[in-house]
Image (cartoon, rainbow, N blue to C red; front, side, top):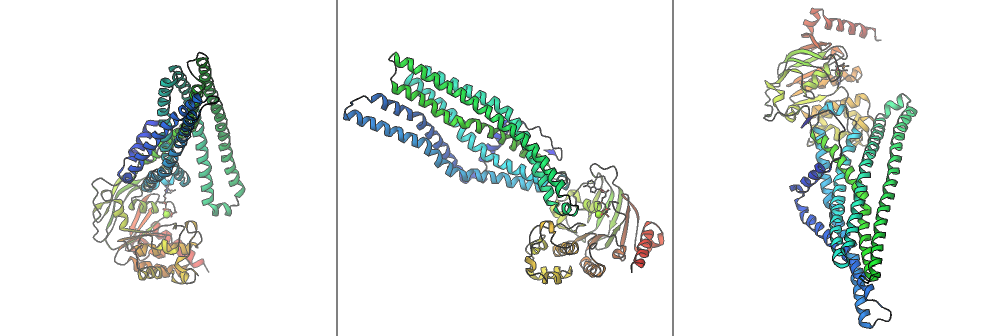
Length: 602
Ligand SMILES: Nc1ncnc2c1ncn2[C@@H]1O[C@H](COP(=O)(O)OP(=O)(O)OP(=O)(O)O)[C@@H](O)[C@H]1O
Ligand SMILES: [Mg+2]
């Protein structure tokens, strides 16, 4: 497994790994129930090919038997042969239709399995990975990868391989019935056709890849712009966004035109090769009819047999392109699946054993990717059940400390312990189960208030929900809504005010009832009246558990058991409010500053 996030695009769409992947997928136990359909599909395909090759022979024989003024007996046998021809033709085309009708379910199940696994895997990848990827392009990789399973199955199993079998059968029938010369021409024509198709397709695959990349860029840009619509509106940059979108689209258009042009080259070349082959067979047959070795009906049959192979071969060009494209898409999906989360559970991870919720940071250093400075040697201990405040200038690293506690990132050095257990040695799920977070920027799902509030605890009772809502001072707001808890909150919760969103975040965390409550400026968007009320609720919620609260407004953490002062990635002071004021350090200065400002506010 490769560690995320290096994302190279070295995929060459080689077939073997793609085939191996599809094969491994089909034999998986989850798809066991579809095995009879898979077997039936193969059988139907083979039988259909047999009918396809044999049908022209019936037609040729009928023509051979037919003479001017033929008697009833001859006519009867001609009718029978024509019937056999019509039936064989019908089955050659009808059986694959029956197969497709049944097989759709199998390929859908296989695609679904792939997509769901990729989706689950993507969710497992760390925060860092998601911060550097566009959600839209990830979505496309999953979608295309899953669809490619369908293409690969359809075209490879039901087009290319059966066509090769048909070619072998046709060569056999031509050789045995009409002369080896025909077999040679048929095989040579098909070989040339296939060779030419593959050669041109290799070239086209590169073009298509460039086109797909441009396509991904267009979608990524559109999604980015549309999800940031508020920013776009606020800065009146609609025109610029449209231009950026237009630029990306015109790059896509250029690639698309090239792809269409090369398709014309391919199709014309294929047509020329096939036409030449059919002409050669007809020419050879003509000479053999003149020599009396064949009849006109045989000549017709030989031409028809080659034309019959031509039909599936006509799709071969397209099928091969789809297969190659599918292989490329699948490879991209594979690269995604191969990424190992930067933060991973230790193989011998044991569930966190809580006993009060003591948090200890020991010499933690951490620098964000692409940054020069970060946290340096941060050590502190939050005794079980105590209330801690974290303060410091913006950008000092306060939120980063919380993210490290959640193990969104692993520190470069040092250890973090909860109740004496290094958080690296416990499963992430059990670690995060013990923590409840009200983030600095509460993001909500585009769903109902109820869905968002009960997100951590979908099975909460109505009383528990009502209690959490009331603790978060949301009751009045929710009661005022016509749809109450079923009100939709909009994309990322943008239909709520900042303060309402924050209180939903608080209700969500309170309802979770975690051992350790973590608040990142949980009340920063509230007016001072609501803030002090919510603060009361938070103080209540913090009772009996460890709590860590980042605050800009120092009054909110004034009564904390311990206050950590962070500046430029270092823990510069710690103590309770009184001690820190007596210290006359950074905290005392910040306190002084805020007190003056509060006095000046009318
Ligand atoms: N994912 C990231 N990648 C790179 N740098 C980051 C990332 N997240 C944060 N940083 C940087 O790390 C530094 C500390 O960020 P952090 O969010 O911890 O600050 P903070 O103390 O919480 O500030 P604020 O009070 O403004 O919320 C900042 O300089 C920030 O730009
Ligand atoms: Mg912060």
